[in-house]
Image (cartoon, rainbow, N blue to C red; front, side):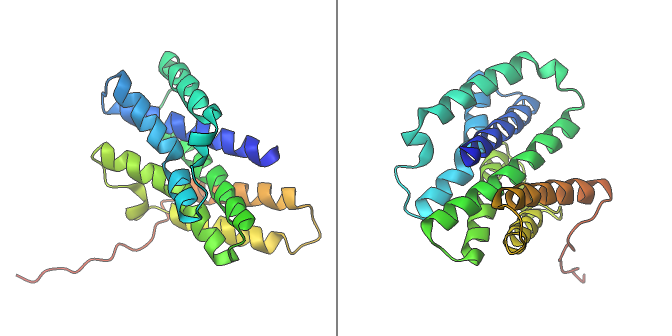
Length: 204
């Protein structure tokens, strides 16, 4: 039940981030719903296909589609209350990657794959919904820019497997890893910490 709640919260967070991007791009109602939907389920869909968990979760559990629909409606109705659009988008996107990274890791553990592959699945779950969202909205995906994004997911995944070695409840390790991901991302943005931008200067 705990993992299901985390999954639902992540779905809500990413659906809201999808709504904010879509509305910023001035898409119509159908476009807003589609962007919110692919943002919320895109990473999880790819993860489930990779581990052979088909039909994928949202096709088996209509709860996800219903929650996304309700989230879209509420986000549209209260968009004026979601002040400082960019900051709000950053917040919900960051919460989403924190929650979904751990959902992906849990799915990997259930499938019996190695910790390294679990972290990869967690990163895919967290990042690829946003990749699809940004591509559809004609933006360079955040994961491919200098910003600390996937790196935060990987760091959180590593911290989880370290924390479970300690004499604490697994649930605490799970929550701790989520917090590490969220804090890493927010601190990186606040202090403008980024990965080096590798490019070759042309000589003319």
